[in-house]
Image (tube, rainbow, N blue to C red; front, side):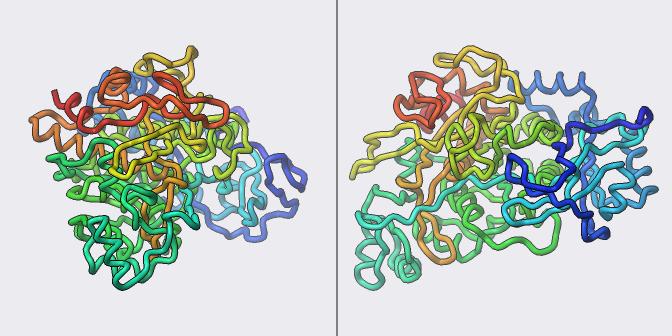
Length: 562
């Protein structure tokens, strides 16, 4: 195969014999039952190494690169892309999409076509009760066609990201269902909620409800006060928050959440983008958490929900490409929340997907888009489902990417008057040392351990579901937590900071991490000193549970607008 380029980094080799593998995959010996099954594959083209290195340096220095310059100087060779597209068409692939920046070619073909064209063996693989058609060995392309391709994504669809949220339905104490009628109105009055909203939501509630002030599930105003973000003159006006998730929330849930929190938001501020078209999965709560809380923290901001249709990496990549393509027409879209991840060791031996997404995150950071990614909900040892601490010690990707802000979690306790009486590292807060990325130049300061690995998380915020957030989901009140709560709240804070900078006649934020690490230990951040996530413990300065700490938003805005 001297005349072909083999993409070892694009798949994890699977055994040829049938049976259960060590990581829970059931390999079926039989040939795929449906040779005509169609699959969409991403052919990811790399920008020249020298150009990528230069772009990494510019982002680390806090530069924002004009979109026209990005398109001119930091794209793959057009000739290479045209050669690839021409070959795919000749081989019978249907070209679904070519990304605006030229880095991604999405092509669709039958399993039979893929096997022959990419010289790959396909088999049936069962994981968690679902059977997929997947590649057993590495794909290849003719050397002259694949010379600038650095990954082929989508051939092992059993590998997917997971959602970083946890619902909590506690009983007893103050976390009870809010009754309807007079009692509902009385409870709502304590929280500053309209009688109409209390009756509407309270009647549907079947879970916990915030009928005691400053007790879980926390409302938006309580979280704003806890992080010194209440009473600000900014509400996110002129800003847009993008959210990447697989599906859309229910409009009725959004309206009920806003009413219960006495917020002025309307559905006109919400834009729903179905990235692939077609039917989306039903809401599960994650999408509702992301949108409700991002919009609640920055009530004047617009929200653009990019629904990928699934948690397969090829679909997440396509959604990221759509976000990048929309930047020229959405100048205020300078913050993106992603509450998804997968333990780095479960990304498989191949690093093709990591390289593919990193190129997209780098492009977003260079464009001035701050991407907030939840660090995980299973502590230092996440399983491949992300919901138990039975895996190896590891960080989760995408939060470990060099071009994003990894957001960890805390356990927040408030006094009756809303003052923070305690905050410690949450046991579920994801954190660790990356196996994919080297230590960035900006990751320095007190408590940063010696070594050469990128460390996660960067910052943190309330996440413990037992001291969780108020959510309306399917017409019911739910108490919810996870770093899927802390990430969209941080995205909302970013929108507030960007509005403040615009008011101060300063440019919108560049990549945030190089700006905030020097603020560690200042009044802009509250250091978290207690708690652990398994292998790591919170400590003075930086730690692998809570990063540099939680924000004092008023002080942070002041520091970033001077």
